[in-house]
Image 1 (cartoon, rainbow, N blue to C red):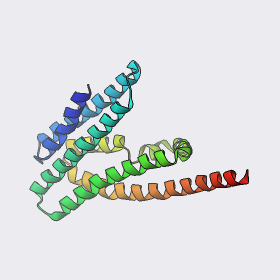
Image 2 (cartoon, rainbow, N blue to C red):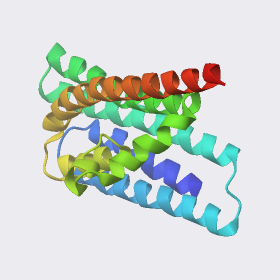
Image 3 (cartoon, rainbow, N blue to C red):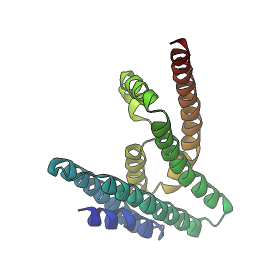
Image 4 (cartoon, rainbow, N blue to C red):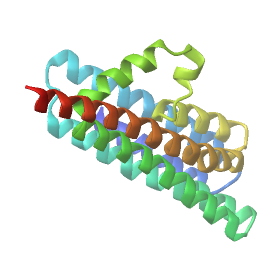
Length: 193
């Protein structure tokens, strides 16, 4: 299942590189199949009890590799239709916004495990629409599938580049405040004993 997921997750970049219908539809369908297979792979591993660190690492690498191919394909396909440097700038900003989000969140979880629970609890209490509009892979993939189906990949790059960086800056500020507050509390507790 993992290998099929990898194949279907990697194909959208190749299809999107053509920049025209019906390849955009093929790319969207391939992305959807990759997404569903990736989900099924994770669920199967948990059900069978075979989930492990290597599998998580392989899943993360699959995401990094396929995301890179996909953004490169989108950018190249759009550049063929509109040969301006703006397309490459948007592609760069879009892909880096996704990686910065992943790195920020991953490092925060590993460095401040005591803060992530309160952050997740607070996130659950928020309005469902706001909670689901976090810049997660689920949102990014659903929007990309729709953008491919409706021939709106340039709009998707604009959104990912602009909203992605606004979200990352906001996330950095929120996580910094949370970690500083929690770190200060722990420091006071440690020295008051």
